[in-house]
Image 1 (cartoon, rainbow, N blue to C red):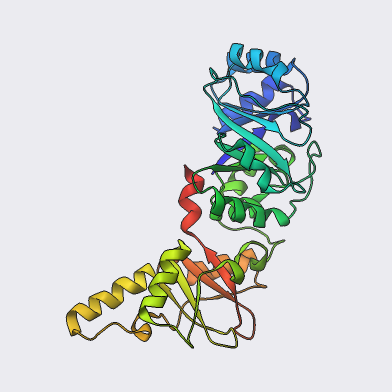
Image 2: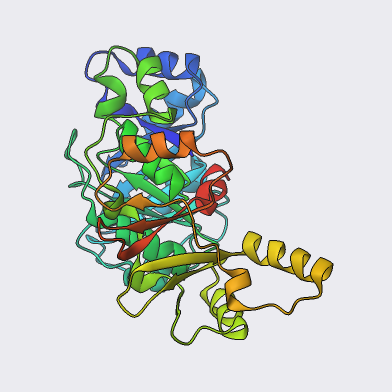
Length: 334
């Protein structure tokens, strides 16, 4: 996951000193916020003279058309327009070659992206736009999941409240870019903050249930009527590579993943015994509790003696609550 540094959040240094520090620490992108002000391009011109770090420009304006000419004169690598204040259609200049995105706040549905699916990415504002140091709104975890499912080939950027723990969660959800402002600049050093944003261990403010895929969004088969064909069809139609197995009381009985199917097929080839639902199901999968913290989740993964791709989530009574899917990690690195 790329880190886009919000350059105007550094209250301790002038712009040149800020960029020099970010350059020294090899930050991925420079996030430039613009509140309906064409003079932002003067800053971008100045940036180009002192660094080669790609520019990530976020514009809030009712009239995007007034920015088009300057965007062609002073091109940037990433450009985002905030949807809520728009008072005219967003008609991108055909000659613009950078990555295009639209931004929405927590209160705006991702349905708004449908009219802009010619864009390359969405920017989800997880705090109030313009409010530095806000707390990440966990409702956005669901928005990220929903957007990923609906637009699997689009990138997701997130801005607001991104600390070390949130960064870990976003990486696991396949987010491509996280914007960091106050967290990056208010710590002991930029290097220290960047290490926290890319580290694998953090203090916890969120539980697993805050960011898991909930059971209602998971492919599930019941032990009452599960056949081999039924399980395979559920996995195929679910497009997530697994199927949770539950009983009539919704207690977790196991999981069938692509790896479990492969193992069952190998056994079948050697023994000639027909495939059955029982032969497919991993009846003792590693699980995590819905109320466990991120730290507890990380400790569980560290203890595991095998790579974990799917981690079923249960409550204290073994009721199936959902799953944590680590497959999206690769999407966040592209």
